[in-house]
Image (cartoon, rainbow, N blue to C red; front, side, top):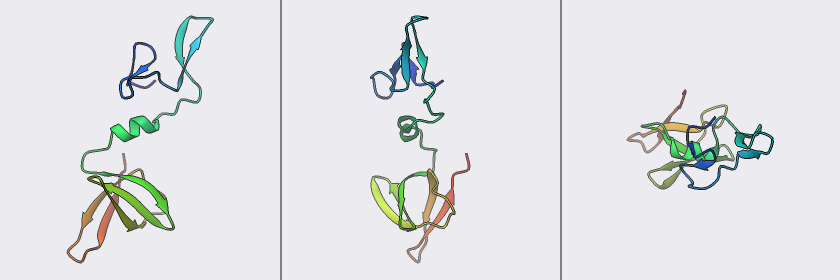
Length: 102
């Protein structure tokens, strides 16, 4: 179960009802839905690992990375689309990327 849920159904991040909880009439309690992901999008946005940047999306072989509020477009060197990358800009102006392994 998510550690951001308080008072049986309220999400700490949104301050609203969690969309992945439902009320069970038989037991009269809030229960997590079977559709509840292990890492919901709301939780992923708040928990970016230190030193890494969030990958917004991938389009046409390029990664769109949010670096301090600015979107950088970088060629995707990976076989997949990672959630987070460590980005270092080289003197040549190119980017070196390291995929988050956690």
